[in-house]
Each structure stands twice: as C-alpha cells, then as structure tokens.
Length: 285
Image: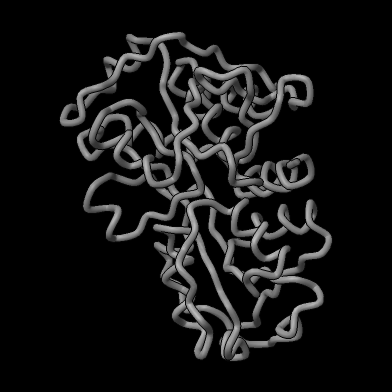
C-alpha cells in the first residue's frame, strides 16, 4: 500500500527529480539492486526527442513534472519521464535522466553501465532480448503511416496502396522493418531520428514514414501539413505482440531490479496509463 501511495503521489504531484552531478557506473554483469538503492538514484536513458514518449524542454517552458537532463540546462518531459519518475519513487530513489541517441542506448546500458534503465518507447524484440532484459509492457502501440495531407497517397486504405511511394523510417527500429510490408514502396535508407524524418516528409523529400499512434498524434499537432492513416483490421501491418509492446530495458543480470519494476508497473492501471499518455500528447511541443 505504501508503494502504491508513493506512486500515485509522484504521478500527479509533478515533483522534480534530483539530478546528480557525477554518476557512478554500475557493473554490467552483477545484480546491482542493493547498490542502486544504497547509491540513492537510478539513471534512466532516453532520446529526449521522441514526443510524446520523451522530449526536451527549456526550464522556462517546462511542465512542473519535467525532470532535469543530466549535464544540461534543459529538462525532459513526456510519458516515459512520468513512468521513469514512478519507477524511481517506487524504488525510493532519485531519478537521473540522461539524453542518449537511440543507437547508443543499449551499449550505454549493457556495455558501459552508464545508465541503469532504458525507458524510451522501446519494443522488447527478440533481437534486443539477446542483449538486455525487458520488463512487462508499460504501453501497447498501434502502428500508422504519417504523410502530407496533400500526398498522392493520403487516401490509401491499405498498406498495399503505396506503390512507388518513398518511405523512410528510423534506423534500428521495427518501423524500418515494417516498410518492407508496403508492397511496391521504395524503402529509403533509414534516418537517425524522428525529427529529421518529419522534416524530410514536410519538405517532400519522402512520401511517408511509419510511427506508433501517440507519436503520430504529437507530430501532426505540431505539423498541420501532415496527417496519418490508421488502417482497419486486415489492411495494416502484421506486428507481433513483442513488436507492438513498449517495455523497460535492463541489464540481463538485474533480476532483483526487474522483479521490483514489474511490481511497480502492476500498480499503474490501464486508465492511468491512458491518462498520462493523453496528457503528454496535449503538452508536447
């Protein structure tokens, strides 16, 4: 009961996390739960550029629940940040956020121990699970196509309706693999991040990209020249449960921490998760 009350206080109170000036890397082959608790803070890595899951905001424009990004004057906000804060509070430690490029997240966790968790809209794919452990899901995604409102493909009703479309996705994500399901589309070389992809679509360099629905909603809120297509059953992408789930990544040695995190996640109801996501979408930049 105490953990549940603490969790609810964090989610709705907007208390700022304490940032540590010098982080202690953890061994990558040990169960570090006791050491993390004794240290007093947990380091969470995310891109801070993937709204509404996570994004960067200046202090002057920050929501009261935003968290300082280690080594910068900016703060992180978004659904992932709220989940990370709930995890930290449930563990009874402070939250430290590190901004890490997508391709560097797993190495920073599993190879160097610079971060303790990845909470970054990451799907628990079988390939990633060879290197890291995953928690139970904290969100379940629907995959959509984002394109210009005036696109020749704006009236598409199926992923089969994109013949000759130029489709680009983010590097090292399931979205890049999903492009191949769009029969006849030109699979462009993937790009490093979503903002760059959106700029390319807005400029007409590419016709479309694939995103999860909350991200698409955030994108079109800030880019009115864009829209998205959510396909009916049987006309969209074939995606496994693992590819549509969003989970927290840990080192494979962190068995105690994994059990504690799953216990905390179990206290966050589906209704609360949906509310947090809608709130993140409404305030994303």
